[in-house]
Image 1 (cartoon, rainbow, N blue to C red):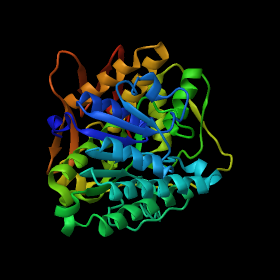
Image 2 (cartoon, rainbow, N blue to C red):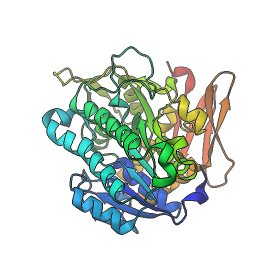
Image 3 (spheres, helix red, strand yellow):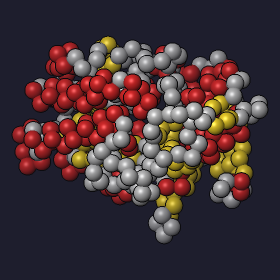
Length: 403
């Protein structure tokens, strides 16, 4: 990623008060962007947007993506160089209770944004963030590729598949590659796995439920311990989004289309494995039980093939699952202590930027390696142990105990 590219760019982020949107807002301001946020109020209390001060020095429009008039007016007023669309109803279980609203937000919200950009062309780079759940999931165990069929068992997953079809239709109909010299708009979509990290308080999410239980000293109940998900720290897919948005600006339609941003396959782990590690990191007797009450259908197996992003964008995850869990636990520990969470976010972004990825082209394995720094320590051994040193936090784990 070319950090200098972002300086003085005007970036419109829809849904910037959410978990991923807040982290992206903080990072873009570090890069020197003029950030314009279009979003509803933060979706939880507390929220990352509030505790981190992500809204400071951000031009905020409190609006709903279903309000096509206000959305178009915002684009016309600020004329963003880059648009990253993240506003969504982002959870599976609520979509069973409010299916129509889920489709209105996730599908028609996307239509409203793209229609505003069609009528008021200004952004050269447009990225629509959907979900890894957009695919027709027959639970074969094969990682999904970008050209696999769209689908979705539940309203949320289906709505994300619909949003992908909307993006493809607008790209082919109004922003085609052979007319790029005329419209100057490069449009892509991004599909990421289950993101984790500090500051997520969304309902019915594993890490959120775990942190809430641990902080309050209560037992954690897990609905689907055998479900396998592609876990990744939030900063990994956000890096992919930034690289892709930059490529759309500099190389146009050569980078249009759909892109997967998922972890290495060995980081796709069962829920029970993830919770066991979190309990160990947290300490203090943290534990969990299986909640066997009947729950709505959720996919058991989900994997992403991110070969396209690795080869064409040279994007690779920097944090393995153990490190991502450790960073997440450290963030919530800091919050529990009453630490300055803006400083904590800035520190983790700074540490993340210092990480390098060594790619073993013969074994197709990625290993983290830190840049030498007197400010931070981040040591991970591939044989015996790893140590994460966050502000006032150290966590150790023996790799031989990993299944």
